[in-house]
Image (tube, rainbow, N blue to C red; front, side, top):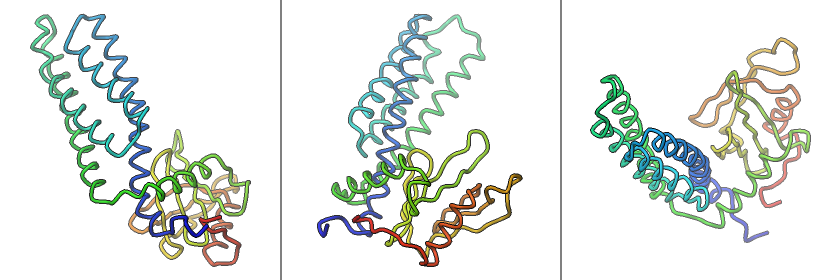
Length: 247
């Protein structure tokens, strides 16, 4: 077990793991949207629109099949190029209403902004050294955390945020610190001293408590089962057994 990545290496790998999950998730989204645009473009016989759909579907399929941090650049460039083409689609449509022109330009502008944001995340990811062993180990931990239930052991706590649908956050409580899976993709690692969960009252049925969760500079509010809150409190105070990340 001595060759396993330590906590500091896992912490650095957390951003890359989150970005890879984001790339895979957005890949599915782009693929579906791209196919839909191809169908609509073929029906309307708008060839630039079909080209946009093909590009989005191809980029999405690539990132689904080969998820990597470089997929952020694939997303960014594809969205910017297709966004610019979308802004000019009205040039090929001479029978559309003038209000349609504004809609295409607005849609294209949103794509460009989205693409620039993805490129910004890619530049940020490039500043953090890749650590494949640490990324693989953290991904294994996160997959186990996502598939396990709070009842499976004393080292998992869960709370939900938002309204409908509520987003689930699971926290693995380890001897070295806490690993949180926020929603389907975001991963955060926090030392025991840097994560706090404060009770803000009980819910109507009394089976859960309203909580404010503080993770360093990140804050969430939601509801947490009473048993999970008590489990976290015991871990926070060091009064419950906690397994190591190497276990």
